[in-house]
Image (cartoon, rainbow, N blue to C red; front, side, top):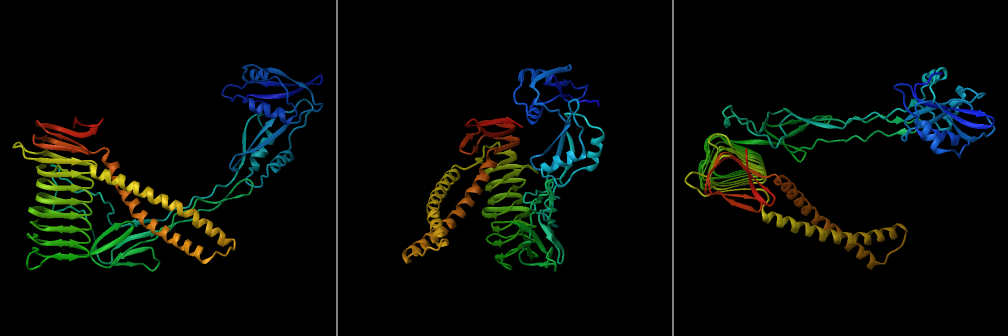
Length: 532
C-alpha cells in the first residue's frame, strides 16, 4: 500500500520492538511527533529515546528506531477515531500492523465509533472506500453533524426617508436649489409607510453524538407608531390616514398633518402653535411666532420672527432677523441666507451666507454654496464649520468656534461624579435587599420594623435609579458630542481675513493676516493650520 504522507510501521524483531519511519513523497505531509507518542502509549510503550524519535520523524530517508522490549504481542492494524471539540466532525487515522497483525474490519471501525458515543452523521460510503484503500497516519473525515439552520431576524422596511443627516442636493455650480430641497418625507393618505417582515426561526441541528444544537435566537421586532396611522389586520403594515409628513423618532413612526398658510403669517393669521408640520407659502412677518412639533417650511422670507420646530426648519429663501429673528430646531436647518438672527440647530446648518448672526449647530455648519461667506457674529459647531470666506477685508469682527466648550466638559465631569455617588448608594442598598429576600424565601418571618425598613430601602433604591437614568442619558449624549469633536475643524475654501477669532475647544487664535485654502484644528495642545 503506497503512502503519500509520511508514516511509520511497527516491527518486532527478536522480541524487540521497533518503529520504521517512511518520509513523505513530494507534496505529502510530514508526521507529527505527538501522533507517534500517542500511538506508542496506546500500544503500552512508555519509555523510549525521544531524540531518536524526533530525528526519525524529520528525516528525509527511511529510518528504523528501536523502542524497547516487545510486550509479547503483535500489533494489529489500528483505527483511532477523534471528534472535534464541538462534536460536529468525526475524523479517523489508520496505523499499519506489524508482521502477522490482523487487518482492520468494519466492526473495528464501528467499535471505535461506539467508544466515542457516535450515533449520528457517519458517512458509510467513505468508510466503505477506506476499507478498500487507505493511507496510514493520514487524517480522514468520516462523518459530520448537521449544523443548525440560521434563522432570519425580523426587519422593518420604511417607505419614507429615515435619514437624519440627509443634505440638500447641489447644482453643478455648487449652489443649492432651495425650491426643491426634498428633505422632508411627504406621504399621501392611505399610503403604505412601513412594513414588518417577521422573523424566521432557525432549525435545530444535531451533533454526531445525537445532541440537539439550538439555533441562534432571532430578533423579533414590532411596529411602533403614533397618531394618524392605520395598521393592517395582520399587524405587519402601517398606512398613513392623512396627507402629511412621515418621520422616525427612536423607532416610532410619526405622521404629522400639515397646517398650511396660503399667504403671509401676519396679523390676519397671528401666531401659530401646531402639533404637526407647518408650511407657509408666503413670508413670516416680524414679531410673529411659529411653534411646530414637526417641521416648518417657509417658501418666502422670515423677518424678525421666531420659529421653533421639533423637526427641521426649511427656508427656501432666508431670514432677515433684524437682530430679533430666531430659528430653533431639534433637527437640521436649511436656509438660503441668515442675517441678523439667532439660529440653533440640533443637527446641521446649511446656508449660503451668514451675516452678523449667532449660529450654533450640534453637528456642523456648512456655508459653501453661493457666495459662501460668514461675516460678523459668532458661528459654532461641534464637529466642523466650513465656508468659502470667513470675515471680510474690512476686518469685521467674526468668531468661529468648533469642538467641546469648556463649560460642557466641566458639566460632563460633574455629571460623572454625581452618577458615581448615586451608584455607591445603590450598591450599598442592594446587599440589604438581597439578604432580606433570601430570608423571606427561606420562610423567615420578619418583625414589622424590619419589614418597614426593607420597604424604605426599596423605595430609596427606586428613587436613586430614577435619578441615575437621566444623568446617564445626558452623560452618553455629551460623550457622543465629545467623540465627534476630537476631529473638529474649521475649513476655509477661499479666504479668511484679519479680525476673525478662531476657537477650537479650549484654544483660541486671532487671525493676523489673510490666508487662503486652509483648515484649523487642535493638535499637540495648540491650534494648527494646514492647507486644504
